[in-house]
Each structure stands twice: as structure tokens, then as C-alpha cells.
Image (tube, rainbow over all chains, first blue to last red; front, side):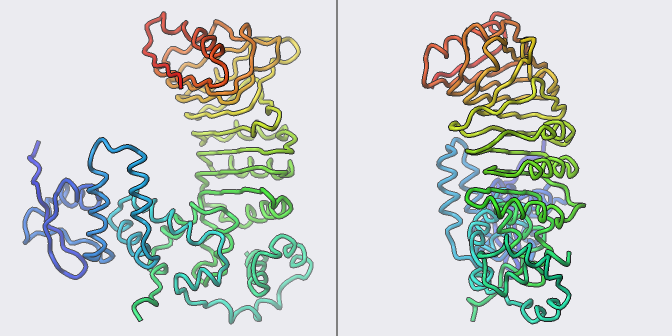
Length: 181
Length: 269
């Protein structure tokens, strides 16, 4: 078996190159593949080019996460409480982190951040969700056009179960989507 | 200016759908009005999570509409349902949908006022040959749910039953529900009541390696058949808080195996 080199060279989206403990970096399947299959990362000249989603700030967060979980003998309770604190960051960074973890195929972290994002989205009205994530609303202008085709009876039927959940405009939209799909 | 960035939209569709898998299905559908991109994302969600507490009328209408509109070519992976007053046709519809869409993990908890599973429910579940784990039961305040006396789950690896009962039928045979689960490896029986008084109960399974028997078990000692046959049993976990007597009975029942030199671990909590 080939001896493990203790450090690996990684290049982040801003073209900066840094040295990272190989044992930690290997937690990310994408980095692991580059090292094992392509023999990359052994020197500064053949640094592993990370996906553009991975900024230096995100890489540092991800390595913190890997470093914690790499230590053997931690209890599930310790890991869980670390994870909970780890995702207590603003939603913008949480999205960036999800994106970076996904690009590195680091599934446990994708699950962790996705669950945190799900918790933010759940139970909120569409307006609240748009506000939190700065999502532009590109749907409202189409409402009138589609409304003409709606069969009134279906709307009444559907209203009874959507009713009371959102604002009126959004109810109609939800119904439209159910009717036309 | 930096703070106004829409980072959520930077995520690929697959990740947005993954996020939806952690949400209850009602909120998943509501995302369809967020923007054009979100219009159809919800249709590919692979985890369905229905909890009808306090929303029985809503769910009885929502479930069929949701199933009819979800993308039919996307397989289902997880299905979690908390049933409060679901109509029987809806449960049948869900079971049929799960079987047709290759569901792998199923968790069904029924709550108060539950009137029993429709008769077509278990045959549909037995036909779901993608199913690898099943959690099924009802809350302790309900009478135990009656299950078919034999469970034909040919692909099931993990089974967790709580507050259920098996019925030996009119001739009061030995009830042996797990012998047809040919790849079962972990079985958990919790808050369990063993069949009718006149029936005997035995666990026979050719693949089971972990058996967990947890609290609130209702049975009389002579109902435990000494013909348990579990050749691959490696670990037994018995937690009976309410009655130490019952612990020794169950432990004694499984003693049969230890005599044959199987590796076993038993825990009393």
C-alpha cells in the first residue's frame, strides 16, 4: 500500500492555494477521488482544483466540520450538538455551505445543511420565504392570464383544502398549479 | 448590497429537492408558488411526510390530489404518515402508490380514533417488493392494531412494530408471523400484545440477527412457544421497565438459543 502523504494542496475558487491535512481533506469524496484516481494534490504545482462553489471561507468551514467528525470516540450526543451549532449561521452562508458541500459530494454535511434549510422554509408563507432568501417573485404577473382557464367548480373544491393557509392571491396560484398540471 | 443575494437559487435542482425531502409534504407543495423555477420542483420529492393532526379534512382532500399531481416517473424512497382520521380509501391509495413507486422505507403511525387498516392495505404492502424498512403501529391509548397472522415481506430488512396484535384465527394455531420475511435482519417489538389468549406465539426466521423486545408487552407466559427458531440471532435487546417478571420470562424464552451456543447480548435497562 502507498504511504499516505500527510498534506494535500487545494486550490479554491479565488485561485488561492493552501495546504490541508490529507486525512481531513479525504473526507470529501471529490478530493479523495482526485488524490487516489488522478494522483493530484501532492505538490503546489498539481494542486487539486476545487469546484467554483468552494470559496476559501466555505472550505475552512467544511474542514472544521471534517476535523471534528474525524476524531474517533466522540459520542453521538457530542456529534449532534456540534452539528446543531455548526448550522447556526445566517441563511446566505447556509446556502453557500450547502452548495459547497454538494459540489464536494460530502453527503453528511449536505444532509445537515439541507435539514437546516428545510426547517427555515417549513411553516412559512411564500412571501416570508422570498423575504428570507431574497427570492425574486417572477410568478405574480402571470396570474390573470391563467385564471381565465380555471373551471370554477374545481376551484371551489380545491379552495376548501387550501383555504386559510396563505393569502388569497397565493391560494389561486396554488390552485392553478394543481388544476393545470 | 452584498446581503441581498439570492443564494438559494444558486443551488442545483437536485439539492433543492433534497431540502424538500426534510419538509412535511404540505409545505413542500406550497413552494410551487415561490417562483417559476419552483413550480415543478415539488413533483420530484422522494420523501412524503403526511401528518394529519388537526387537519383531517385538509389531508383527506390533499393526499389524492397530491398523488395525482406528483411526477409519476420519480420513485418514492421514504413515506412517513401519521394517520389521524384518514379515510380508508386514502390509506389504500397511499399503499397502492407506495407499491407502484418502489417505496423503500415506510413509517406509519396511527393515532386516536383509528378504526383499523382497510383490508386491502397489507396485501398491497406485501406486493411492494422494494420495501426494506417498515415502522408500523398505533399509539398506546389505542387498542392494538390487528395484523395478518403471517407477514409476507420478501425484501424487508428492518421491521419495527408497536402496539399491534396477531390473531391465530378460529383454530388457535401457533402464530408465527415472521417466517416469510426471508431477509429480515432487525426486528423490534414494542408495546406489543401477543394474539389471543388461546394462541401461542413464536418467532421463526432464518435471517434475523437482532431482536429487540421493548416495554408494555402484554402476554401470558404460556403463550410463548418454545419452538422459536432463530439460527442467525446475534443480539437480543430486552427492555421491560414495567415488569421485571416479564423480563425473565422473555429471557427464558430465548434461552433456547443460548444453549445452542449462539452469541447473544442481553440488556436490562
